[in-house]
Image 1: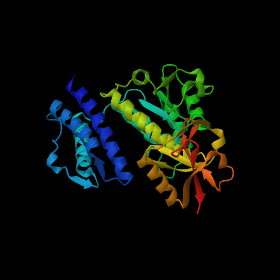
Image 2 (image 1 turned 60 degrees about the vertical axis):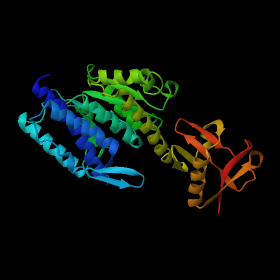
Image 3 (image 1 turned 180 degrees about the vertical axis):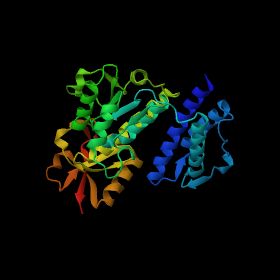
Image 4 (image 1 turned 135 degrees about the vertical axis):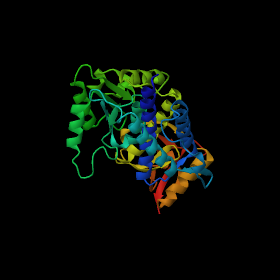
Length: 353
């Protein structure tokens, strides 16, 4: 690989890290996990090994570890400053920022509650295609403060030469997502349109989405779908495809739970479940009840008490007369599970105190 090509590739990787750190700071997070730091550290060391004279080396003695509870965090400020210096040095050595033939603008359509998942995909796609940037309407800075939403969205739809539609339980009914997908479909025939489905089955995808080729990130074919998406969009796949896909699935679950609150549910997340006691429960299908492990049950009961509710287990045949609301484990995929007591006939309710 030519020296400039190496620099372009490493600049894209390091710039993606810098952007993520900037976002952490904007969200009031001055520290990162040791795991995130180690990913950045490896990429910095790879850059320094392959481009030894391109920029100042990072002095890892600046790294400050901060114990917080039973975790250890890393102060991000020295790392963030170093990445800024490296990117600036690379731009100078190459004469300017990497050239961008054509528009090289992607458009990633998603529901606002799916931001973390969409941003994970955006960073992966950009890292795999130096010089390509994906517009994300919910990403801080992509629509300047005070600007209308419609103007920047329309402008980027016109400029984009590749489109990603992220279909989830939260976005599949979104008019905005449908509109953006239509704009991508009516664009140039050589502009790829990729529909990624997460947390949703093909039978749940309505027309016109159902008429498009769907790439399902869930299930055993998820890896093949991810590779196909990156190939069609002109991006090199992540080095750790399995790890990238696993994180995408975790983020999808978390985003799905957050999205439930916007659908009119009264409930709270505890660990990896969303528990609700009010909302459109009749719209959900019933799945077999679940008996929680002791630690999870104790956390749920404590959460209900903090909400001013009195949790209790009552017999199913007394639910109609109980002065409380039944508590369910609710899934974004459209089902609910009763919380079982020691006997299957006993279910959890929450009563007003």
